Amino acid sequence: MRLILFGAPGVGKGTQAKILASRLNIPHISTGDILREAVKAKTPLGIKAYEIMSRGELVPDDIMIGIINETLNQARCKNGFILDGFPRTLPQAKELEKLLMELKLEHVFYVNLTANGDEIIRRLTNRRACKVCQNIFTLSEIEGKNSCPICNSTDSFYQREDDKEDVIRNRLEVFSTTTQPVLDYYDRRGILVTVDGLGAIDDVTTSILTSIEAKLE
Image (cartoon, rainbow, N blue to C red):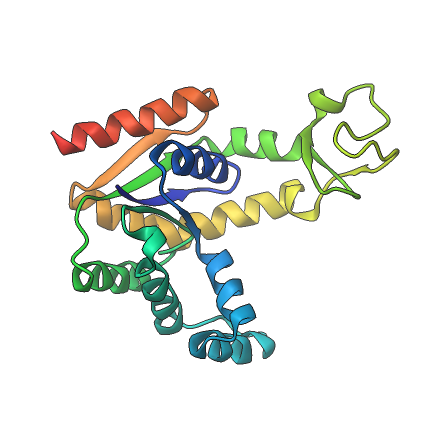
């Protein structure tokens, strides 16, 4: 099974990707991770990406598509994958479509996790991170606690910059502006699976799998 996973910041996309990867026994391919891996491994495309990133510029679509192509051709992706973080724009979606056709990959499902913007803001502003181990907790999880439940460090909780309301609102606006046209593109073609991401974690996972199964019928 091959999934392309979408979702606004804070909707739980990363959590669902990990669960689905484990349940379906397919790798979770984060484009950020494979880009860093290519740079670290000093592959030809990784070297090009590093040169561009070191100038403070965005890695162009053709290099990202090349890195994704290399990854999807690896043995670990033989039985499927979950692609997370790409495409973010309509031109990227069309390039990815060409790549999938070239690789002759079938049963590709496009899954969008949705959420109310106000609820996402409430969720993310309610988070705190540990300065030492970097694990993230909700305020209710650490209420009355002075030490981290994971590493036992004291007075280490803080609010990350990207969990502050003004930053979250900007991230949601960027997502809406750049990625919504991608979702509309897939939706018009009848291949987008849309799932409410704000339910219980297990319920969201079940909804995703049920919706995919319905597409197979």
